[in-house]
Amino acid sequence: MQFWPNFNQMAIIQNKKHVYRINLPLREYLVKYGREVKLPIGYDDLSRYDNAITLFDRAGQDTLWETVFYPPSDIRDIYYNLKVIYAELKTNGDLSVTRHLSVDRVDVCIYGNTRPFRVRVINTINDNFDYFYIKKADASRVYGLELEHILSPNRISYITSGNTLVEEHIAGIPGDLFIRHYLHDPKLNKVRLAKEFIKFNERCFVRLLGDMHSSNFVIVITPDFEEEHYRIRAIDFDQQSYEGAKSVFLPQYFKQNNPILALGYNRVTPESVRQYQKEEKVMIANRLNTAGNRIFSLTDIMASDTISTPENTAMLRHELAQHYHNPDFLQCQTMGEVVKLSLRQVLKEAEHPQ
Picture 1 (cartoon, rainbow, N blue to C red):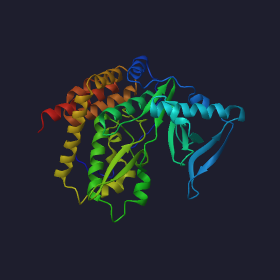
Picture 2: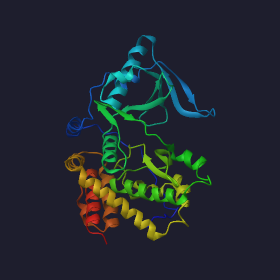
Picture 3: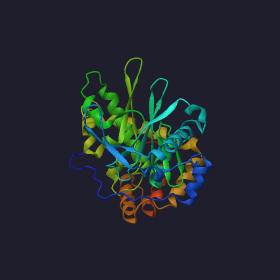
Picture 4: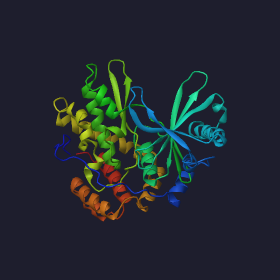
C-alpha cells in the first residue's frame, strides 16, 4: 500500500454515527472478562445537574467543556459514588484507596455527540490528580476498546454497567497540541515519530478503527538512553468499523495529520515504510495468536451484531476486496465479518510473508 497519500484524496466522514446498544452476547462477554460491574450511579444520574459554567484552560481559552454543579441535597452522595466508581476502575472495588481522595469537579463535553462526563479526582495528601470518563454505553465503542486492549501495545481499563461506560484517562499529549507546540522542536527525532505514525496507521487499518485525526489520539514521549521514543495511542473509539470508505480507517488520509506525515517525506524510504508495516502486522498476528479464545469470542459476537449500515458494509467490503485482492471480502454480510476477515488476512500474511 502506498503510504504517502495524494492530498486531494482526504478522508471525510459525512454523517453522524448511529449509537448501537450492547446486545446480550456482548453483555455476557463483558461479564465473563470482568468488564461488567454493578455501579451505584450511571450516566443518566450525572445528567441531572442544575447548573454549569464554561471551563477555560490556563491561557483563558474556552475548552468546550463545562463544569457542572449538582443540588446540595445530592452532591455528597454523587461525589461519594464517583469515588466508588474510581475504585472499581482502578482497584477492582477496593474502597481503602479512596480515603485520601476527593472529587474535585465534574465536567461535561458540550461539543461531543454523546456529551461524555469527565471526573477529576484529587489526592488530598499531595494534590496529585487523575481523570476518568463516564459515557453512554455504545457497542461500537466497547468493541473498539476491547480490540485496542487485545491487539495494540496498550492495555485499556474500562468497565460497563447497563447503559453506562466508564473509561480511564489515557495520558499523553493530544495530537493537535503536539503538532502545534512540539513538531518544530530541534530535539524532535523526526524519523522515530514518522516510524511510529506508520505503525499506528497500520494498527488502525487492520482492526478498522476510524476517524483517527490529530484530536483523537495522543502522543506519549518516553526518554530512551540515547533518544526519545514515541507512541501514538487512540483515545476515541466511536468510529470502530462503522464507515464505508477505506480511507476513514487510515490516519494518513486525514488532513489534520499532514504535518506529521510531512516529517517522513524525505526521511523514510518506501522500503523502510514496508518494513515498518510488516513489523506491525507481525506484532498484531502474535497478539492474535496469544489472545486465543478471547479474540475468537469477541469477533464471533461482532460478526452477528449490527454495528454499521448495510450501505457502509457493502462499500467497505468492496474496497477491501480490491485492496487485498481477496474476493472473500465480498461475501461478508456484516461489518463484524469484515473485521474478522481483516484479522485473518493479517495472520495469513504473517504466516506466508512475500
